[in-house]
Amino acid sequence: MLLLQIESIADALNSSEWVFPIAECFHIAAFAWSIGLIAAVDYKLLGFGIQHSKPSEVLHDTAPWTLLGLAVVLLSGPLLFLSDTRMYLHNPSFVFKMYALAAAILFNYTIHRKVAQSDSSSQAVRTVVAVVSLALWISVVFGGLFIAFA
Amino acid sequence: MLLSFAQWIQFTTMFTALRGSANVYPIVLSLHMIGIAFFGGMILMTDLRLLGLALRNRSIADVVNQFRVPKRWGLLLTATCGILLAGSKAEEYYYNAFFRTKLILFAVVIVTELVFYRSVYANPEVLDRTPSVPVNAKLAAAISMLLWTSIACCGRGIGYIEPPLDKIHAQIHLRQDCALRAWRGPYSLKGQDHQDVASTN
Image (cartoon, rainbow over all chains, first blue to last red; front, side, top):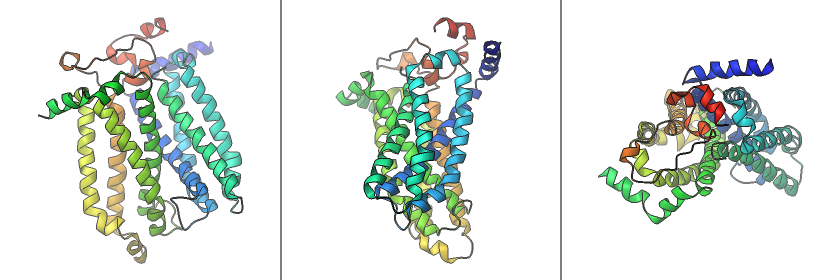
C-alpha cells in the first residue's frame, strides 16, 4: 500500500520534465546558502577571515538564515528522492550521504552550537569542532555528487 | 576559432587524463560544489545585508569586510575546479546552450562589479553613514543575487543537454545505469517510460 503511494508520487514527479531540475536548483542554491553560513562560523572558530566579531555573534547572525536554507534543502531533497526511491536506496553514495547528513545536522545543533556560543572555549577545542564540522558537511556534498557516479 | 581552441585544449594531456579518469573528475566536481557553498553562502549574506533584510544590527562595513576574504577563497576554489571541468569537455560545452549562457552571465557579473565596485564594495564604511542604504547599493545587491543564482542554475542545466555526439571528437563514456538519471535528469526526458527505469535497476 505504501509502495503504491510512493509509486504514484514518483509518477506525479516524473510527469513533468521540469519538476526534477527545478527542485534540484532549489536544493543546490539552498545547500550553498546553509553550508556556506555554517562555514562562516567555522572560519571564525578557526580564527581566520572574519574579524571584529566573536564566534557567538557570527552564529547569532547566521543561524536563522542557515535554518531557512536547511529547511529548503530538506524540502527539495525528499522530492528528488521520491522521484526514484529504488535507485537512491540502492545507491551507496546516497546511503553514505544520509548518514553523513544526519551526523552533520546532529553535530551542528549540539556540540558545534555549544562551542560557537561560548566565547571562552579554548582555541584547541574550537579548531577541532570547526574541522569536524567542515569535514562532515564536505562529506555530505561529496556523497550527493557521487550519487551520479556510483 | 573558438571551436578549434576548445578542441585543442580538451586534447591537452592534462584534460584528456581528467576526462578519462573515473575518480578525479567527480572529485573535482564535488570540490566545485563545495566552493559554491563557501562562496555562495557568503555572497548571499552580504547581499541580504545591503538590501537591509538581514543582520541589520551590524554595520554594512562589518558584514562586507567580514565575508570578503572567505568569499575570495571560495571563489578561487570554484573557479579553479570550474576551469578544469570546462577544459576537459571543452568541445561538448562549446555546443551547450546553458554553458554559453553561463559564460555570458559571468561577463555581466564582471561588468556589474566594475560599475558598482567603487561606490559600493570598495568603501562600505560610507554606506553606514547614510540613514538608509543607498539605492545603488541595493541595486548592486539585487543584481548580484539574481546573477549568481542564475549562474548556479545554468551550471546545473549544462548536465541536462545531450551532447551532439556526431560533432564531438572526444570519447564519451555513456552510462547505462540508473545512477545517470541523477546526472542527466529524469529518463522521461528521453522518452522512456518508468518501466525501463525499473527494469535496469
